[in-house]
Structures are given as C-alpha cells and as structure tokens.
Amino acid sequence: TGPLVALWWAVFALPLLLLVREAPGGAPIGAAIRRGLADLGRTLKSLPGQGNLVRFLVGSAVYREGFNLLFAFGGIYAAGTLGLNPGQLILFGIGLNVTSGIGAILAAWADDALGSKPTILVSIVALVAIGIPIILVTDPIWFIGLALVLGLFLGPAQAASRTLMGRLASVGSEGEAYGLYGLTGRATGFVGPWLFAAVTAAFASQRAGMATVVVLLALGGLVVATVREPAKG
Image (spheres, rainbow, N blue to C red):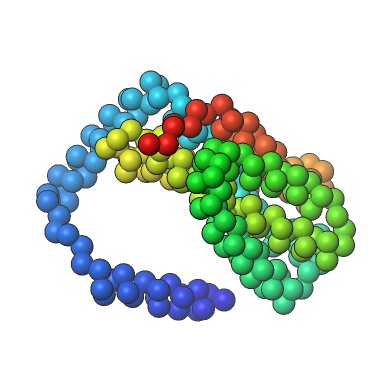
C-alpha cells in the first residue's frame, strides 16, 4: 500500500503545486519566524484569560485522542480479536471512510441547524453508545455493521470541532488559534497508544484496551459540554 499512498499524494498535490500562485512574502524568513514566535508568546500569555477557549482546547484534545486511537488500532483490534483477514480489513477500511465522508457532509446541515457544540456533543454521545457494543460483540458481521454506523458520527464531530474552534478564536487571531488546536492534538499523541498498551497488558485483552477509546471520548465530551458557544453573527 505504500506506493499507492505515495501515488495518491503526488497526483492530488500536483494541482496545488502547479496551478496555485502564492502571494510573495512580505518579510525575510528569519524575520517572519521571529514575528511568529513573538505572536505565539503573546497568545500563550493571553490563554489564562480565555477559559472558554482553554476548556475547548483541552476537551477536544482528549476526544481527538480517542479518534486517533480508533484510527490507529481499530484495524489491529479487528484482526487480532475478531480475526478479520487482510481482504476484509481493506473492505472494512473503505466502508468506514465512506460512512465517515457521508457523516461529514451531513455535518454541514447539523452545524447550521443545531450549532457546532450540540453537533459535537450529539456525535460523541452516539460514538460512546455505539462504541460500547462494538467492544462487546464477538461476531465480525455485527462488528463491521456497528463500526460503519459509528463512522457516520466521526465526520460531524471532527468537522464541527474545527468550526467551533474558529468561532471561539478572537478576531484577528484565528490562525494562532488553529495552530494551538493542532498543537494540543499532537502534543497528546502519545497518550492514546500508551493507554491502549498499558490497559491491554494489564488485562491481557485488546477489548479492554479499546475501551480506552470510549473513556477518552466521554471525558473529552464532558469538558466540551462546559464550553459556551458564541451566538451566531
């Protein structure tokens, strides 16, 4: 699959590289880096006075780690515990991406109708409710069916999270806010794999390890539930 992934990246990156003309930079790279670091410092110093934003960054980092754990170890769990063969895993992955894509399309309607925060919370409640039986079932058919339904709620949760991040950011600091959003997600990247490995080893069961996904989703959702969503302008 490595060459296929490389080809995919190359084909879809070419239009951006060849057709999009970037505006010339206004400052040498050294000055731009220094200015960027200074802006970052000011942003970090301002965080204690932005409790709403901080709570969202923390909560979203926790449940996004649940997403990352699901993506990273879902296939391993399906093969190791339920015995799916490579062909079944490929079809399972394709199906999960399709349902996630459908969910992401529906997210636009849900975000407009319900708001970003309700969309996130409804999605997380659904993910937890579906995730529990996914961990418990032993029939591969039931596992695949439930997982495909679960995929419908992954897209909305991710899309609405990015929308809410933009609405919580101060005017003029959206770029910095999205940078912090990405940073908090990556800074906690070790937590999910560590939890999965530790719990799996402690209970000698991948089912127990995958239960950490549900825990992370629930904890992150509880934190985000305390966030005040700005009124739509």
